[in-house]
Structure formats: C-alpha cells, structure tokens
Image 1 (tube, helix red, strand yellow):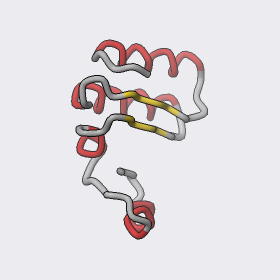
Image 2 (cartoon, rainbow, N blue to C red):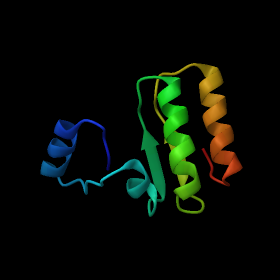
Image 3 (spheres, rainbow, N blue to C red):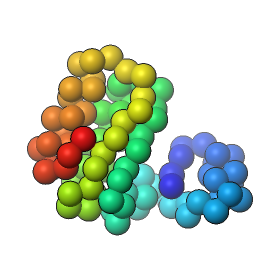
Length: 85
C-alpha cells in the first residue's frame, strides 16, 4: 500500500500491509487498485500517474466522494490504458 501520510504507512505496516515507496510501486503488480482520495483533482492526478504503470488488466476502483465529471475523467484515463474501472 501507499499513502502520502507517513503515520498512516506506519500503522498499515504494523497491521501487516506491505508498504511501498510511492503509488506507482504500489500498483505495478496489483490485480486490484483501490483509491480513496479527498477530491477529484487528487484522483485524476493519481490515475494519470498510475494507469500507464499498472499491471495489464488491473481493476481500478475509486471510492472517493468526488464529482461526476472527475469520476468520468478517471474512468476515461483507465480505459485509455486498457484498464477496467
């Protein structure tokens, strides 16, 4: 897993999560990627960075409470890279 907040990574690691240095490293071998971010701009930024590096066929699931337009854009980014979302 990956989080921008170091304290969240510490807790995750204490509970058995394999912690990665960045989002790309966290998704490169994952079959399923779940994101939960504060705003649409964050989701779009993350999707732009991870989609090109994600494992072929990885399922991207965003659970953020964001606007419809951003959700559609995120889906389009995933689709552009052949990833279901």
